[in-house]
Image (cartoon, rainbow, N blue to C red):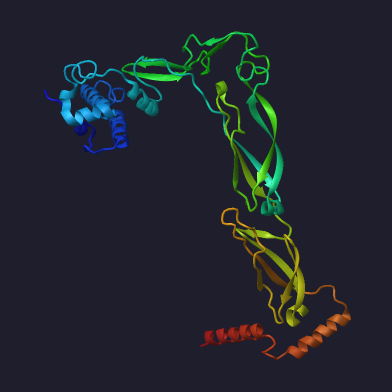
Length: 377
Protein backbone atom coordinates (compact mmCIF):
# COMPACT_ATOMS: atom_id res chain seq x y z
CA UNK A 1 0.00 0.00 0.00
CA UNK A 2 1.53 3.30 -1.10
CA UNK A 3 2.00 6.06 1.44
CA UNK A 4 0.13 9.36 1.27
CA UNK A 5 2.05 12.52 0.49
CA UNK A 6 3.36 13.98 3.76
CA UNK A 7 2.15 17.48 2.87
CA UNK A 8 -1.31 16.05 2.19
CA UNK A 9 -1.25 14.25 5.55
CA UNK A 10 -0.70 17.58 7.36
CA UNK A 11 -3.07 19.47 5.06
CA UNK A 12 -0.35 21.79 3.77
CA UNK A 13 1.07 23.00 0.47
CA UNK A 14 4.64 22.24 -0.52
CA UNK A 15 5.75 25.80 0.24
CA UNK A 16 4.53 25.76 3.86
CA UNK A 17 6.76 27.46 6.44
CA UNK A 18 8.28 25.73 9.47
CA UNK A 19 5.76 27.44 11.76
CA UNK A 20 2.85 26.31 9.58
CA UNK A 21 4.14 22.72 9.66
CA UNK A 22 4.52 22.85 13.43
CA UNK A 23 1.04 24.33 13.97
CA UNK A 24 -0.58 21.78 11.66
CA UNK A 25 1.16 18.90 13.43
CA UNK A 26 0.15 20.11 16.91
CA UNK A 27 -3.47 20.54 15.85
CA UNK A 28 -3.79 17.15 14.14
CA UNK A 29 -1.80 15.26 16.78
CA UNK A 30 -4.04 16.60 19.52
CA UNK A 31 -7.15 15.65 17.53
CA UNK A 32 -6.09 12.06 16.71
CA UNK A 33 -4.04 11.20 19.79
CA UNK A 34 -4.86 7.65 21.04
CA UNK A 35 -5.44 8.89 24.60
CA UNK A 36 -8.32 11.01 23.29
CA UNK A 37 -9.62 8.25 21.02
CA UNK A 38 -9.21 5.14 23.15
CA UNK A 39 -10.01 1.91 21.33
CA UNK A 40 -9.99 3.56 17.89
CA UNK A 41 -7.58 1.82 15.54
CA UNK A 42 -8.31 4.41 12.87
CA UNK A 43 -7.21 7.25 15.16
CA UNK A 44 -4.08 5.34 16.13
CA UNK A 45 -3.10 4.80 12.48
CA UNK A 46 -3.78 8.43 11.63
CA UNK A 47 -1.70 9.56 14.58
CA UNK A 48 1.23 7.42 13.43
CA UNK A 49 0.88 8.82 9.92
CA UNK A 50 0.81 12.41 11.21
CA UNK A 51 3.82 11.75 13.43
CA UNK A 52 5.76 10.22 10.53
CA UNK A 53 4.96 13.17 8.27
CA UNK A 54 6.13 15.68 10.86
CA UNK A 55 9.34 13.75 11.57
CA UNK A 56 10.31 14.33 7.96
CA UNK A 57 8.84 17.76 7.17
CA UNK A 58 9.83 19.19 10.55
CA UNK A 59 13.51 18.49 9.83
CA UNK A 60 15.01 20.79 7.19
CA UNK A 61 17.49 18.19 5.88
CA UNK A 62 14.94 15.38 5.71
CA UNK A 63 12.40 17.71 4.14
CA UNK A 64 14.88 18.72 1.41
CA UNK A 65 15.50 15.05 0.56
CA UNK A 66 11.79 14.30 0.60
CA UNK A 67 11.04 17.23 -1.72
CA UNK A 68 13.66 15.87 -4.15
CA UNK A 69 13.17 12.09 -3.96
CA UNK A 70 9.83 11.56 -2.22
CA UNK A 71 9.28 8.48 -0.03
CA UNK A 72 12.16 6.65 -1.75
CA UNK A 73 14.60 8.85 0.17
CA UNK A 74 13.71 6.93 3.36
CA UNK A 75 13.51 3.41 2.05
CA UNK A 76 16.30 0.85 2.50
CA UNK A 77 17.07 2.26 5.96
CA UNK A 78 17.66 5.73 4.57
CA UNK A 79 17.11 7.48 7.92
CA UNK A 80 17.72 4.91 10.59
CA UNK A 81 15.42 1.96 10.46
CA UNK A 82 13.57 0.93 7.32
CA UNK A 83 10.81 2.58 5.38
CA UNK A 84 9.66 5.70 7.14
CA UNK A 85 11.78 4.75 10.16
CA UNK A 86 12.57 7.18 12.99
CA UNK A 87 15.89 7.32 14.74
CA UNK A 88 14.67 9.33 17.76
CA UNK A 89 11.94 11.44 19.30
CA UNK A 90 13.71 14.65 20.29
CA UNK A 91 11.54 16.75 17.97
CA UNK A 92 8.38 15.18 19.37
CA UNK A 93 9.47 15.75 22.96
CA UNK A 94 9.74 19.47 22.24
CA UNK A 95 6.30 19.56 20.67
CA UNK A 96 4.54 17.45 23.28
CA UNK A 97 6.24 19.30 26.11
CA UNK A 98 4.46 22.41 24.83
CA UNK A 99 1.15 20.60 24.25
CA UNK A 100 0.77 18.29 27.22
CA UNK A 101 3.64 19.05 29.60
CA UNK A 102 5.45 15.78 28.83
CA UNK A 103 7.17 13.83 26.08
CA UNK A 104 7.85 10.45 24.50
CA UNK A 105 10.41 7.77 24.97
CA UNK A 106 13.14 7.29 27.51
CA UNK A 107 15.79 9.20 25.59
CA UNK A 108 18.62 11.21 27.12
CA UNK A 109 18.52 12.70 30.61
CA UNK A 110 16.83 16.09 30.94
CA UNK A 111 18.71 19.05 32.25
CA UNK A 112 18.17 20.17 35.84
CA UNK A 113 15.21 22.47 36.14
CA UNK A 114 16.14 26.13 36.36
CA UNK A 115 13.30 28.35 37.56
CA UNK A 116 13.69 32.10 37.28
CA UNK A 117 12.65 34.08 40.35
CA UNK A 118 9.21 35.65 40.62
CA UNK A 119 8.57 39.18 39.43
CA UNK A 120 7.48 41.50 42.23
CA UNK A 121 5.29 44.59 42.28
CA UNK A 122 5.60 47.62 44.55
CA UNK A 123 3.22 50.60 44.63
CA UNK A 124 5.13 53.85 45.10
CA UNK A 125 3.12 56.87 46.22
CA UNK A 126 4.62 60.24 45.24
CA UNK A 127 3.55 63.88 45.21
CA UNK A 128 2.55 65.75 42.07
CA UNK A 129 5.72 67.83 42.35
CA UNK A 130 7.85 64.65 42.41
CA UNK A 131 5.94 63.25 39.44
CA UNK A 132 6.42 66.40 37.38
CA UNK A 133 10.07 67.07 38.22
CA UNK A 134 11.33 63.51 38.80
CA UNK A 135 13.98 62.50 41.31
CA UNK A 136 14.94 59.59 43.54
CA UNK A 137 12.93 57.74 46.18
CA UNK A 138 14.11 55.12 48.66
CA UNK A 139 11.89 52.07 49.12
CA UNK A 140 11.91 48.97 51.34
CA UNK A 141 10.36 45.65 50.33
CA UNK A 142 10.23 42.06 51.52
CA UNK A 143 11.63 39.55 49.02
CA UNK A 144 13.29 36.17 48.61
CA UNK A 145 17.07 36.65 48.36
CA UNK A 146 20.00 34.29 47.95
CA UNK A 147 21.05 32.78 51.27
CA UNK A 148 24.33 34.35 52.47
CA UNK A 149 25.28 31.24 54.44
CA UNK A 150 25.24 28.72 51.58
CA UNK A 151 25.33 31.19 48.63
CA UNK A 152 22.23 29.58 47.16
CA UNK A 153 23.41 25.95 47.22
CA UNK A 154 21.07 24.97 50.06
CA UNK A 155 23.86 22.90 51.73
CA UNK A 156 25.93 23.40 54.85
CA UNK A 157 29.59 24.21 54.16
CA UNK A 158 31.55 21.00 53.48
CA UNK A 159 28.48 18.77 53.06
CA UNK A 160 27.83 16.75 49.91
CA UNK A 161 25.40 17.76 47.20
CA UNK A 162 24.53 14.86 44.90
CA UNK A 163 22.08 14.28 42.10
CA UNK A 164 18.65 13.15 43.21
CA UNK A 165 18.47 9.33 42.85
CA UNK A 166 14.83 9.45 41.76
CA UNK A 167 15.15 11.86 38.82
CA UNK A 168 18.93 11.64 38.31
CA UNK A 169 19.31 15.39 38.60
CA UNK A 170 16.67 16.41 36.08
CA UNK A 171 14.08 17.53 38.64
CA UNK A 172 11.38 15.79 36.54
CA UNK A 173 9.89 12.29 36.60
CA UNK A 174 8.42 10.63 33.50
CA UNK A 175 5.54 8.22 33.87
CA UNK A 176 4.03 5.87 31.29
CA UNK A 177 0.27 6.23 30.84
CA UNK A 178 -0.75 3.77 28.18
CA UNK A 179 0.67 4.88 24.86
CA UNK A 180 1.61 8.31 26.15
CA UNK A 181 4.25 9.48 28.60
CA UNK A 182 3.72 12.35 31.03
CA UNK A 183 6.25 14.37 32.96
CA UNK A 184 5.92 15.91 36.42
CA UNK A 185 8.02 17.50 39.15
CA UNK A 186 10.10 14.98 41.08
CA UNK A 187 8.39 14.34 44.44
CA UNK A 188 11.70 13.44 46.11
CA UNK A 189 13.67 16.62 45.42
CA UNK A 190 10.68 18.86 44.54
CA UNK A 191 12.27 19.81 41.26
CA UNK A 192 15.71 20.84 42.55
CA UNK A 193 17.44 17.77 41.11
CA UNK A 194 19.65 17.63 44.19
CA UNK A 195 20.12 15.45 47.25
CA UNK A 196 21.69 17.48 50.06
CA UNK A 197 23.55 15.66 52.81
CA UNK A 198 23.21 18.47 55.36
CA UNK A 199 20.72 21.23 54.49
CA UNK A 200 21.78 24.78 55.31
CA UNK A 201 20.45 25.81 58.73
CA UNK A 202 19.74 29.36 57.60
CA UNK A 203 17.55 28.54 54.60
CA UNK A 204 16.65 24.89 55.43
CA UNK A 205 18.02 23.74 52.08
CA UNK A 206 16.02 26.11 49.89
CA UNK A 207 19.00 28.33 49.01
CA UNK A 208 16.82 31.42 49.54
CA UNK A 209 15.69 33.40 52.57
CA UNK A 210 13.20 36.20 53.20
CA UNK A 211 14.93 39.55 53.47
CA UNK A 212 14.10 43.23 53.64
CA UNK A 213 15.72 44.99 50.70
CA UNK A 214 16.45 48.73 50.47
CA UNK A 215 16.46 50.22 46.97
CA UNK A 216 16.78 53.65 45.43
CA UNK A 217 14.29 54.22 42.60
CA UNK A 218 14.91 56.86 39.94
CA UNK A 219 11.64 58.56 38.96
CA UNK A 220 11.66 60.04 35.45
CA UNK A 221 10.17 63.52 35.12
CA UNK A 222 6.57 63.47 33.88
CA UNK A 223 5.40 60.09 35.21
CA UNK A 224 1.74 59.65 36.08
CA UNK A 225 -0.47 57.31 38.07
CA UNK A 226 -0.39 53.81 36.59
CA UNK A 227 3.07 54.13 35.01
CA UNK A 228 5.44 51.25 35.78
CA UNK A 229 9.18 51.32 36.31
CA UNK A 230 10.99 48.01 35.69
CA UNK A 231 14.03 47.23 37.84
CA UNK A 232 15.71 44.26 36.20
CA UNK A 233 16.91 41.51 38.56
CA UNK A 234 15.48 43.15 41.69
CA UNK A 235 12.66 40.63 42.12
CA UNK A 236 12.77 37.36 44.03
CA UNK A 237 15.85 35.14 43.75
CA UNK A 238 15.54 32.15 41.41
CA UNK A 239 15.69 28.48 42.33
CA UNK A 240 18.87 26.45 41.89
CA UNK A 241 20.93 29.54 41.16
CA UNK A 242 18.59 30.77 38.44
CA UNK A 243 18.39 34.52 37.73
CA UNK A 244 16.22 36.71 39.94
CA UNK A 245 12.94 38.10 38.67
CA UNK A 246 12.24 41.77 38.04
CA UNK A 247 10.68 44.41 40.27
CA UNK A 248 7.86 46.52 38.81
CA UNK A 249 7.35 49.81 40.62
CA UNK A 250 3.81 51.10 39.99
CA UNK A 251 3.44 54.87 40.35
CA UNK A 252 0.53 56.41 42.27
CA UNK A 253 0.42 60.22 42.37
CA UNK A 254 -1.31 61.67 45.45
CA UNK A 255 -4.10 64.22 45.09
CA UNK A 256 -2.90 67.82 45.17
CA UNK A 257 -4.48 70.64 47.18
CA UNK A 258 -4.41 73.09 44.24
CA UNK A 259 -3.84 71.33 40.94
CA UNK A 260 -5.56 68.58 39.03
CA UNK A 261 -3.73 66.81 36.23
CA UNK A 262 -5.07 65.66 32.89
CA UNK A 263 -2.27 64.23 30.77
CA UNK A 264 0.26 67.00 30.21
CA UNK A 265 -2.05 69.80 31.40
CA UNK A 266 -2.61 71.13 34.92
CA UNK A 267 -5.89 72.69 36.05
CA UNK A 268 -6.67 74.95 38.99
CA UNK A 269 -9.53 77.15 40.18
CA UNK A 270 -8.81 80.79 41.03
CA UNK A 271 -11.40 82.78 43.02
CA UNK A 272 -11.85 86.47 42.15
CA UNK A 273 -14.16 89.15 43.55
CA UNK A 274 -17.12 90.27 41.47
CA UNK A 275 -15.61 93.76 41.54
CA UNK A 276 -12.49 92.47 39.77
CA UNK A 277 -14.65 90.38 37.46
CA UNK A 278 -16.56 93.55 36.48
CA UNK A 279 -13.71 96.06 36.37
CA UNK A 280 -10.74 93.81 35.56
CA UNK A 281 -7.39 93.68 37.28
CA UNK A 282 -4.37 91.48 37.93
CA UNK A 283 -3.97 88.53 40.26
CA UNK A 284 -1.23 86.11 41.26
CA UNK A 285 -1.72 82.45 40.33
CA UNK A 286 0.40 79.49 41.46
CA UNK A 287 2.50 77.28 39.20
CA UNK A 288 4.81 74.40 40.07
CA UNK A 289 7.72 76.77 39.35
CA UNK A 290 6.45 79.61 41.54
CA UNK A 291 3.98 82.47 41.08
CA UNK A 292 3.01 84.46 37.99
CA UNK A 293 0.77 87.41 37.22
CA UNK A 294 -2.51 86.78 35.40
CA UNK A 295 -4.39 89.68 33.85
CA UNK A 296 -8.17 89.55 34.28
CA UNK A 297 -10.06 91.56 31.63
CA UNK A 298 -13.07 93.67 32.60
CA UNK A 299 -16.47 91.95 32.41
CA UNK A 300 -15.02 88.46 32.99
CA UNK A 301 -17.71 85.86 33.69
CA UNK A 302 -17.36 83.08 36.23
CA UNK A 303 -16.01 79.83 34.77
CA UNK A 304 -13.84 81.53 32.15
CA UNK A 305 -10.63 79.59 31.39
CA UNK A 306 -7.20 81.21 31.06
CA UNK A 307 -4.40 79.18 29.48
CA UNK A 308 -0.77 79.68 30.49
CA UNK A 309 1.43 78.02 27.87
CA UNK A 310 4.20 75.63 28.91
CA UNK A 311 3.43 75.64 32.64
CA UNK A 312 2.00 72.14 32.74
CA UNK A 313 3.83 68.78 32.73
CA UNK A 314 6.61 67.80 30.33
CA UNK A 315 5.85 64.40 28.81
CA UNK A 316 8.65 61.85 29.39
CA UNK A 317 8.13 60.50 25.87
CA UNK A 318 7.55 63.50 23.61
CA UNK A 319 9.30 66.09 25.82
CA UNK A 320 6.31 68.33 25.04
CA UNK A 321 5.30 70.66 27.88
CA UNK A 322 1.60 70.96 28.62
CA UNK A 323 -0.25 74.05 29.81
CA UNK A 324 -1.62 75.44 33.06
CA UNK A 325 -5.34 76.17 32.71
CA UNK A 326 -6.84 78.49 35.32
CA UNK A 327 -10.60 78.62 35.81
CA UNK A 328 -11.78 81.83 37.46
CA UNK A 329 -14.69 81.58 39.88
CA UNK A 330 -16.46 84.79 40.88
CA UNK A 331 -16.82 84.74 44.65
CA UNK A 332 -19.97 86.09 46.30
CA UNK A 333 -19.11 88.25 49.32
CA UNK A 334 -20.29 87.00 52.73
CA UNK A 335 -20.74 88.46 56.25
CA UNK A 336 -21.73 91.92 54.95
CA UNK A 337 -22.56 94.77 57.31
CA UNK A 338 -25.57 97.05 56.80
CA UNK A 339 -23.59 99.74 55.01
CA UNK A 340 -22.20 97.23 52.52
CA UNK A 341 -25.63 95.73 51.95
CA UNK A 342 -27.10 99.17 51.28
CA UNK A 343 -24.38 99.92 48.73
CA UNK A 344 -25.21 96.68 46.94
CA UNK A 345 -28.91 97.56 46.89
CA UNK A 346 -28.08 100.91 45.32
CA UNK A 347 -25.92 99.15 42.72
CA UNK A 348 -28.73 96.70 41.97
CA UNK A 349 -31.22 99.55 41.50
CA UNK A 350 -28.83 101.37 39.16
CA UNK A 351 -28.52 98.24 37.01
CA UNK A 352 -32.27 97.54 36.91
CA UNK A 353 -33.71 97.65 33.41
CA UNK A 354 -30.35 97.91 31.72
CA UNK A 355 -30.04 94.95 29.38
CA UNK A 356 -26.55 96.01 28.35
CA UNK A 357 -25.32 95.51 31.94
CA UNK A 358 -26.74 92.01 32.36
CA UNK A 359 -26.98 90.40 28.89
CA UNK A 360 -27.27 86.80 30.11
CA UNK A 361 -29.90 87.72 32.70
CA UNK A 362 -32.00 89.62 30.18
CA UNK A 363 -31.60 86.94 27.48
CA UNK A 364 -32.59 84.15 29.87
CA UNK A 365 -35.84 85.77 31.02
CA UNK A 366 -36.74 86.81 27.49
CA UNK A 367 -36.42 83.15 26.55
CA UNK A 368 -38.54 82.05 29.53
CA UNK A 369 -41.31 84.50 28.59
CA UNK A 370 -41.31 83.26 25.00
CA UNK A 371 -41.50 79.64 26.21
CA UNK A 372 -44.59 80.23 28.35
CA UNK A 373 -46.25 82.33 25.63
CA UNK A 374 -45.86 79.42 23.21
CA UNK A 375 -47.35 76.99 25.77
CA UNK A 376 -50.51 79.14 25.99
CA UNK A 377 -51.19 79.00 22.27
